[in-house]
Amino acid sequence: MPAVVDDLRPSPASTEPLPAPRVLPRSARRVCWGVFCLTLAVYVVTASGHYVGQDQEYTYRTARALVEQGTFAIQSLEQPNEAGRTGVDGRFYAHYAPGLSLAMAPLIPVGRGLEGLTEGVRARYTWGARDEADKAARILASYFNAPVTAATAALLALLVLRLGYPSAAAIFTALAYAFATFAWGQARVVFADPLQGLLLLLGVVLLLGASPSRAGLGGTALLLAVLVKLTSVLALPLVLLLPDARGRALWRTPTTVALILGPALVALALHGLFNLGRYGDALNTGYLARSVDGQEVADAGAAGRVLRVGFANIPLVGFYGLLVSPARGVVWYALPIVAAAWAFRRFYRERRSAALAFGGMAALWLVVHGFWIGWHGGWGWGPRYLLPVLPLALVPLATCWLERRARFAAVGLVLVGVLIQLPGALVDFWTAGQRASDMFAANCVRCTDGRFSVYRSLVPEAADLKIHTELLRSGILDLGWVTFAGTWLAPVTLGVAALLAAAGLRLLWDRPMGTAPARRAPNRPGRRRPHVRGRPRAVHGA
Image (cartoon, rainbow, N blue to C red):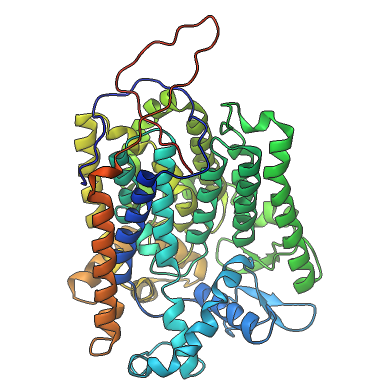
């Protein structure tokens, strides 16, 4: 760990974060950029270099249709479990929110423009594509979530600094998220959850100690998060618990509340217009709710139908699956969460408002998705539906860095967590899913999608952790620079990663980036502020 430890003594209960100036200090910028570069270096090396999966195909086709035809309508996959439906104009629309496809759209023309430079790489591209230029665009799009997740780690470091913890604690927490949780495996796949998590975290960073202008920016970030995925609305009531620039809860100022919730209402209106244009109903998202055996039973676009069909009556299976199951349990796929949960009590004493907001958001996210009939999130590495709130849930991990014993225990959990993530970061999730599907088909009696989901999510022998590990031990790697060895992609990948890693280490190791001393808050009239040694130092920035 870089030599930037400011104070290893225990920190007592402390006040809310101090108001921050507009300019981010050099020390905090170095920490954030260092975390981003180092994380992105590893993610580039472990990127797959290809595009695969049903959900990914829908979002890619939508982005391509936006660029080439100016429409969200796409050609369906012609499969029995289509993730979408025919719209009022007779064309097919995927049922996903528009945000991810809009964010990916600029990559399509750039990728197609690289066609002349990717001939050798495209010759080895065995995954589906429309033409040679489309292969080049798919290769580029496959890297989409690598910088997104690296930026999330950098923002997490900034959030920890804003809360007053030392630089080393911020770096430790951010790198624990990047390499000891399923965020690493999810960075290889183009799901919407990493981008949703980045925007939610950006909103929280902007709203912590916010002035009115910053509140408007935070509300805009939340607007974008809602456009990426509608479940982002779950965060709206809880971010209002954060303190503003004066240390008061954001919900106490009507103007601030309007600046935060106003953009979210705009996002909901845009969702309604999006649904109206596709399906002729503002409340119809196009999602099809499924019964337990996987059969489509009703259109779950209307809220009433969602509550009756899309959510399970007995959520114990979902809670068990998301928390401790071998296939999706967050305690296995994000082992540092155990240390963060243990440290939450101390974090609550030190930063009560933030603890209530972060803990409440994580709890609400778990409850809602535990009730959801598709809580497992389909094929993939770890409980991806929990990924958007995982950075906030890990913030208490920073307090472990301040006590020697807690620090050693947390570091141990993080190192084990890194080992657990290696199969997810080095093996193709689709290959693992196909192997699980073959295992299920060889033994099932009634082979339905619903029964396979139960088998894949709850039976240990079909767990991703087990199957990915077996594939890794067999030497079945899924790395872009290995798949396309002998082409220019391999040396470019390793060269870019080396430069990023060198820059990141240089930024994190330099001693001048130590945390700035905290500003003294004015004493209240009639009260004498006691001097306490070991208080976490606030970084004045964001």
